[in-house]
Length: 334
Picture 1 (tube, rainbow, N blue to C red):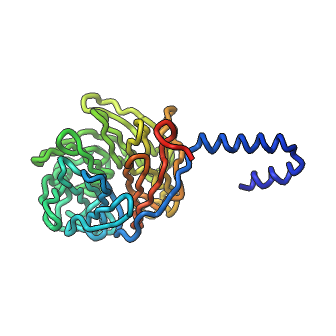
Picture 2 (cartoon, rainbow, N blue to C red):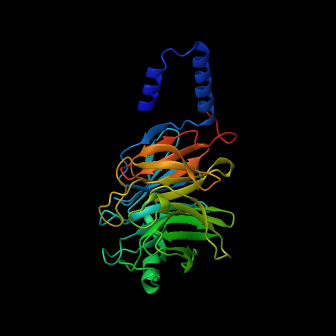
Picture 3 (cartoon, rainbow, N blue to C red):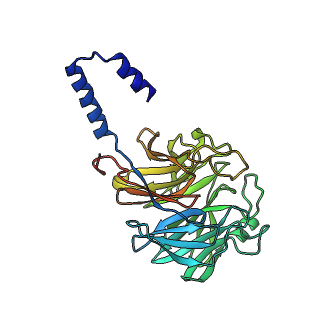
């Protein structure tokens, strides 16, 4: 803004034709760069965490502090309880952290509620009713019995994201640095193991898995990456890098890919969130870089895309609606 003011002050005598040319250039830039407006859709969620689009095209959001999953109308923001009674967060982290749908049934990911903090199961819970759940996979027991190759403090791990995959699920563990494959009958196996890269959000397209990496503390932008891999190859390809503390990744219209950066780490302790209002929604570019779609987000945790609109969930309990995220021909410029 300071450069614009200085430029205008020193060019008071500019010719009318030159002013017209500048206006034409500004208009052209406005057509090229999409305008992503942030609107507050929902407030008051109790520890917003993971999210999913349900079979009814509504948003489903986990409220980790109170063990609840809420249904949100993406048009009006009307919120209703979908399920409650899941284990809540015990230490300010964990609880019910993600939700996913498979064949019309909801499943919840619960973490950091077992040993050494509590007596519940760290795992995947099938939602059988508004207050009824069945544990289909004990991820904590598997993790403790099959420790990772990287250093760790919590034997049960810290599971982060849940994604449907080939009739079952993939689960990231940001503490044990791996992706688990889970079947509906409770089978658990290592799908991918990594060094200390802190895997977070997941997206699946066909046989390709896309994964966000937050990177090790202090979660520098260079370590914030989106990578891809498949079920048969050991190769892991970097799709894009350069955003601080990436926590989610999603495909939008025309296979345009977006990621969510929580922002500049607050440095309080390992696992603590970013500093307030430093998060951003970014678009992946073909050259492996990111372009900012919307910034100033307050500790975002996950997002979903419906049409050409992103719905961003925040730790503070908001859902932000960001319109027109994709460029032409897949979106409408303003």
